[in-house]
Image (cartoon, rainbow, N blue to C red; front, side):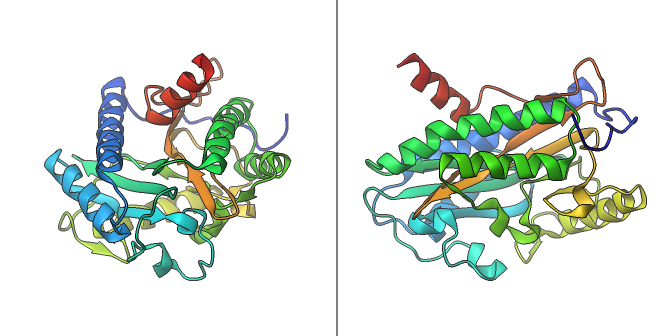
Length: 286
């Protein structure tokens, strides 16, 4: 084992808090599944993102960590992405055989989820292979966090697994090259539902405070392969999103990881009853 030792601080959320985070994450995935079932050839990314947003608000969502995203075809692998505005939903039309990714980060009463849901319309054998192999990343990340590895080391080991599979790393295209970030309960002031550059105004306030606070302790709330992430994950909640691609097909999952600071149980996924987990279980049963 290598990397910085697990910080001595403990998880600052009660069981009730964790249950509330779990409820918001379940709502986000349920709305993503419903939107995925609604998709059909001819729908655009903008229409899909708007439908996802509509369902989330109908489910009681008050604000967004970031606005809902939808990516179709080669845009699921971020091919040709050079500037942040390319992440926003476009007029790309969904066609038969195309992969898609839906991504949303709803907030209810300050409790935040950040999820990614991948799928395909019709048959796509490359997507099927990527989907099956994605399971290894979830298992690898949890094991390495439990062993106390530094965030940047875990990132590099994920890269190594991507290379062994013959795929390429697509989360490196996200701003900051992040594979994850900390999630806290939002207590910011200001109007709910107002966004700037795709992020909620209240989110930007919270992120700013976290960046300053974590920097003062020699840590980062962003999980990347840079020196700032050369420390074990701080106890709390982390939204983790390995995103892999092959040619014009990309796939990801994103969900909340609980880091406890307790040597007896250092980390666990907040919820195992999620679409990608159920999908892998069905593959194994078949």
